[in-house]
Amino acid sequence: MIVAFSVAPAAASDETGSVHDAVAAAVEVVRASGLPNRTSSMFTEVEGEWDEVMAVVKGAVDAVAAVSPRVSLVLKADVRPGRTGEIDGKVARLEAALEARAQHG
Image (cartoon, rainbow, N blue to C red; front, side, top):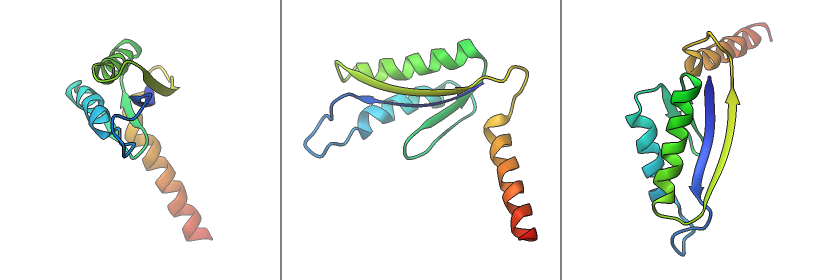
């Protein structure tokens, strides 16, 4: 499965509204997991089996909860048993489709 999630303090920790320090703590948990992952400006994706992915999400939430009494979590999952490598495979297939469209277009 692939889970895309965003976790942050429910309230900003400073007057600029930035939450990057808390988010960095969450991303450290994801990267330390050893599971395939990537982080963009709004979401972190992680791929693996249900229990291991959800444990990583919980760890990320716990990392943010260590600095904030309230945590916001947004989660989307693509549950597709028996598939691996989809964190890159889905993107590769999309890029190939775009390339094919550009050549015929």
